[in-house]
Image (cartoon, rainbow, N blue to C red):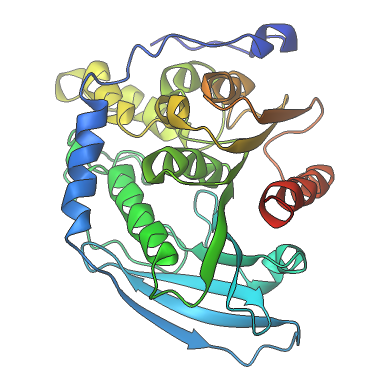
Length: 326
């Protein structure tokens, strides 16, 4: 693994569609096995309605006990007294949380309900899984790195599959007319992967997605969670780790490996000064999307940060593909 300075020019990025050399040959079988195992499990979910000061919405605190009993905290924010409507499942960034109801009022103003859950081990939610990795690098990227079936993000994806299944079920508080997935950074990568894993998704909005095209990210990222893996290689005795073994595990959860199964309307964005999720890793995912209804917004001066201009693009995209779509 060599380290590089800088990323490709925009004209190169637009056509950047790398070969997926680290996509495991048993990728589909691996995930089909996980889904079969999950199909026999049913989450225990508590929904506690709040007395919320905004009169146009209903807000509930959710505790979602996932496949291994991990209680994941979440929120539901929906238009007042509405029983069926379009739904968005939002995913937060690395080290973040499910957020606050006020974060999602812009979407409920369109007539859309929003679910947002903590990722396990992040926010205020625990992680009941047990990992063996031997890494002294802090963070979640190396948790279970040598065991694809019990890697941290494998477990996160299993949580997401159970959550989306519950959201679509008759047991959920809102009947779903259309379902969209959104997220930024870690959340953007999770939204892409879940769109492929779950299927039957109507919309994806992925802002500067993380966990995408790891082999390139490890070459050019200068900040953020990818550096946990770079430092793992730098600080660990080579006889106790293998680049190929690490990449094999990451290959099962790399969001770019899911993109050829995404056929719904998709909106993405990237800032060209982003050193956390380098533009080439985002364009790799975008250019591998199977859908023809896709758009990527590029902001040359932006880094890895919230973009208020793009927030309005997202509102328009949600109106077109979730609210007004037939």
